[in-house]
Image 1 (spheres, rainbow, N blue to C red):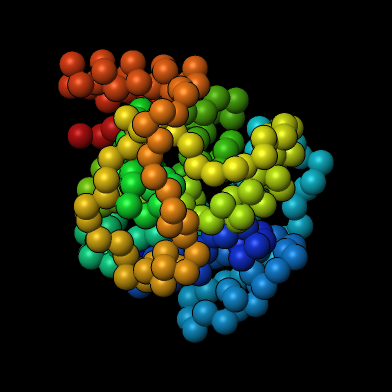
Image 2 (image 1 turned 135 degrees about the horizontal axis):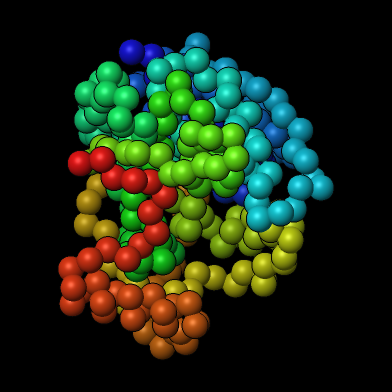
Length: 287
C-alpha cells in the first residue's frame, strides 16, 4: 500500500498557519507528501524546503487572482497537489490541521483495512475545532463534525471547494464519496491563531469569495457553542501553540447572538432532545 499526503499553502508564516507541524504530523504514515506552494511574500517555501525528509515533493504554483468565485482558487490549488499523488490513497490535510501521534497507527490500519474494498472510496475523520484558544472547542452543528480527508486515488474525484471531495460517476453529475469512519480526530487550529495573524488572513482572502471581511477585533462566538478541551494536543504542535496561538480568549457570556448562531442554538437543542446530529456531512457513510 502506498499513501500520498498532499496539501497547498501560500504565505503560511504570514497568515499564522501551523503548516510545518501539519505536514510533519502526517509524514510517518505517508510514502510521499506533495505540497503545492503558491507564490508567497514570506519564508513559506524555504521552511518547507528545510524539512528533513525525502518524502516531500514541492510544486511551485501561481494563484489565479481573477478567480474570486466562492473560494474556488483554493480548490484549484488543492487539485494541483492531489493530481500529482501517485499512491493508492491520497491523504489531504489543510495547513491548519494536525494529526496526533497516538492516532497514526489507527489511521494507517484503517487505510490497510479498506484498501481492497472498492465500496469504500474515502475515509472520514472526527474533528476537533479549537476556537479562541487551545483550551476551547467549538461544538455546535455549525461546525462540521466529520469530514473526508483520505480519498481513493483510483477514482474520478475532484474538489469544488477546499473542504470536500466530489466523485464523478458520470461526466455531468457528481456525488459525495462513500466513506468509512477512521475513528481518529483531526486537530483543527485555524481559529486559535493570533489575532494579528487572523486579521491579516481575513483581509487577504476575502476577495476569493468576492467580499470583504469586517475588521477582525478578536474571537467572538456563542458561549453555548463551546466546551473545554480536556485531552492532549499533538506533541508536534505544542511549540506552535505556545508561541503562536492566541492565549487571552475567554467566552463572553453576554455575546449578542447573530441570526446564524440563533439557528445553531436551536439546532443544538433539537440534537439534545432527539439524539441526532444536524451538522453538515459531505460523504455517504458506509457501515
